[in-house]
Image (tube, rainbow, N blue to C red; front, side, top):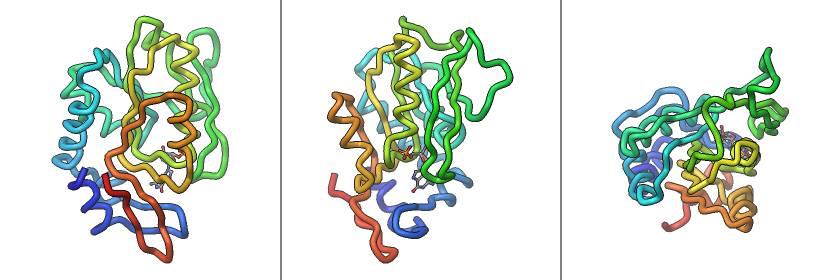
Length: 191
Ligand code: 5GP
């Protein structure tokens, strides 16, 4: 998606060799018209798949998922992060290794909101090594929900998570794909 690619190239800040900061439009300050276009694009890509729920992880995925949900006219469920006081029969639980925090955390979704009747679209802001997505996929699997597609705002292809998950047969569509980050220079894939 050209609009997002331009914003990454013009405003994205590189931290080290593999982290991209997009706090100015996605991860801290949120540019609503941009996210609206992203939501529209996800609907163009996945709108024909009879999706009845969008699933994401708090916090950065929520805004994108909500903008997409306006086009799909379905609810958004976000997996909650961190230890829950009442882990028990009423929650699906998975563990996610965090690339940015270098530590693992739990994600939980209430069994009230996800079941085998659901056809879901998973949305997240970044796909790097694929740990966050694997956690949501694990929860979808526990619920018996059908994953109809996965929409990612920014995929960092050089970290390999997208390739690994696509090999399992998942349909992952990324709005912008970063091929490499070298000496502070971002190279995007032609899409
Ligand atoms: P993965 O689990 O695929 O390794 O990483 C995805 C998660 O880590 C995303 O949900 C995102 O929050 C965070 N993340 C990974 N790489 C980046 C990055 O370069 N910039 C930002 N802002 N977050 C990232």
